[in-house]
Image (cartoon, rainbow, N blue to C red; front, side, top):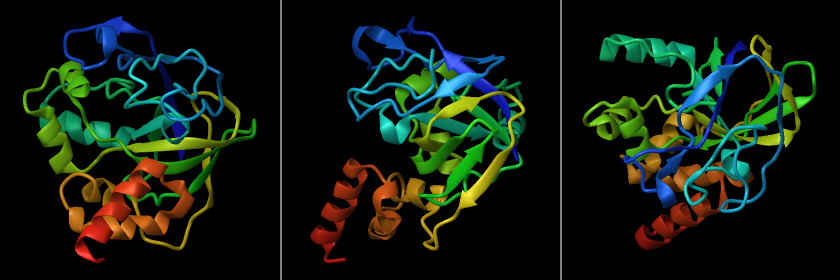
Length: 223
């Protein structure tokens, strides 16, 4: 299990985003590294956890529970077959393109040691697609299609800061005993709301706003 590519984005003006000023940092490109990774701060204030990476819409992106976005090279390869086009690292807006890791099956609260510089990351949620993502990829109906495939990649929070570089080894150092995977979480908050009560088992690994949504659903339906 390793990091194939470390990808950073620069702010650019586009017409396919709801962000203020039309700015987005979704267009990420591979860099040689090392890149320092640290906790960016709470939602609405903190941006990306990677030094030099632009996050422009702080309402929906960035913050401690979305500090780093990882997407598997294996899933990009699968989408290449589906879309019949090349998908280079960073095109999905991911900071880390990984290899040899089942991100869809990773559990919220699962912790990874990355490289030898002390960096520890924790799985916090899945990526929910938006209009900016669809516009950047240029695929009609992309939000619906990406959601149906349920290969969302993982948002990570920073437990211990440190550097990351292409080629760094990734080691799972903690795996919780609940069954709230990235896939289950994604389906719960997109296509199957009946799964929402189960997501609470992830505890503090899940951002407060998602806890509140799951709790509200449980109270409404007596679950």
